[in-house]
Length: 388
Image (cartoon, rainbow, N blue to C red):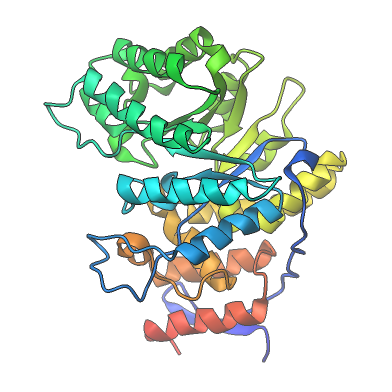
């Protein structure tokens, strides 16, 4: 029957009846939202390229840039060349640099495009010969690329710094030096080790609370050069604790893909803005929820976003760094790309049962834009894996 599909569940095949009514895709403007909202956007691979996916990225530029326009049309900002775009996880600096330049040029053709771009040190290979001065120069090189195109900076965490730093003072030295030089206030990105194991012990301490003290020291000393900080630690308690200690001029951008709804809504002492990978996957829901929050319709805000949280927690389940597979799979189900191929061949990082549960949760969250198309495409993936 229509709207029914056989999916793997607990080692067996079971019929699933779709129930979700898709959320309307409606154009909106970022200026109408009560929060600053960025979606960390993925890249669309080119499945027809004659390359070795594990070694050489191949990007479908037309679809990749069209996806950014879709986010802008919904009123969402684009956080460009972040980990959602497989930065440092299949996408190298040469490709990221090209992506940044192309996206910024697209943004200049609009009057409503909010965009900020990741600048880091991922063209450095961590090792004993990499010094703090080398890391500073690497940051400067990438920042120069973004600023030369008129772009704003998201200052990404550095694997090289995590490997080279001997303690908090090295982090303070690097960030102080970089922040003094930037043309416009930046968003600092503290990416937790659950997203990238190479970043364990960032800010010079494996204890997140002690690390937070170092990060806050950097921000307080350079508050005029910091628009905000995005923390991705998947802990609402740590985010709220840090949010309450920030200078008044500095935003907290939630990177918590487990608890974003309540963090964005906030409490009597403040709220978080957003820079989220999950907003790539659930953009229409995020856009509608922000519009509702702007009308002070908190009930509608939660009615739209709460059902997406189980989906997000599933996509971002451990190993969290494989979340990008779920983001791209949902883009494929929703017809935003014609294939389920990824840079680095990362479509293979999640199991068929994981993807089947993603399908169920996406239906319940009402983020399958065209259920008939989603069923058709899910059946193709199932067939490739021997499920008819």
